[in-house]
Structures are given as C-alpha cells and as structure tokens.
Length: 191
Image (cartoon, rainbow, N blue to C red):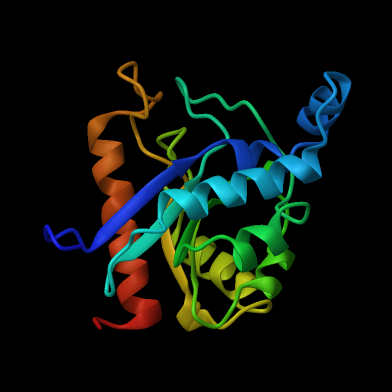
C-alpha cells in the first residue's frame, strides 16, 4: 500500500478445516452451522483486506496443520470452493495438494479468470524428493480444470511452521525448493 507493501499473505486455517467431514460434524455437534461459518469467515477476510491499495496482491494459504510433519484436517476443497474463490477478496490461494487427503483438483473449475491457485503438490512433511515427472503430471491433472497459466507450484506448507519444524533435514528442504524452481522454469519458462 502507501507504505510500500505490495504483497500480503494470509494464513487461513478455519476455511481449510471446513473441508473435513469430521470437523464439520464436530462443529454441528456444538451447535454451529459450517456453511454459515464459511460465509462469516469470508466476511472477516474481506473486512481485513478492505483497505488494500491498488496494485497490492493478497494471497491466502489454506493450512490444515503442519506440526512435526502431522496434520489436523483432511478433505477436498469442494465444500468451500465457491465461497473461497468467488466471495473472498484475495488474488491467489496457496492450496495443499501433496496427498490424497486434500482431494482432487475438480474444485479448481470454480477459480475465476483473474485469480491464481498455488498448488502445494510438493510435500513439506517428509524429505522424499518428488520427481520432475511426478510434479508435471500433477500440474497437468490440475490444468484439466483451470488454465495452466493461472496455476503455480510450491511446497504444501512451510518447512518449519512451528519452532519444532518438520521431519526433514535442511539439505532436503533446499533440494525441494530447487526442484520447484526447476519444474516451474520447464513448465512456464523464465517469465
């Protein structure tokens, strides 16, 4: 904005938890309506970014938990996709897609043409290095539902979301980041 900030990333956990059928049942059990909560969360996000200045990019990381290589929620994005993509005033979404527990890419069909999805198809939870072919195949799968130029590639989450970190070594983290850059250059060029 006026002070020079042109990029802001929000770390959002509540919306991602609404993808999980067990979490939704828990909320219902305590008297909450998960679908109503989704709209409340959208209103809160929109209120938080209402003062954005022209030219500022706002993104949102949808986190399902990342403590010592574990997680708290699972489920595809279908229950939240329409509100997430079409009601929230953000430009890009960092989405966990490193395992089957994140569901398929079908919800990306709702991604508006002016927004981007940053696909976390590389896990940050283990040191096993994904192959270039594996990452490219996943990008191709996602591109069946939205334009490849609206997709980006990243690790699923941070390598150390808490001070305890995840169960992988520093050199494994650097190898994963290098692989992301390598694949991105091959898929999208050096724009």
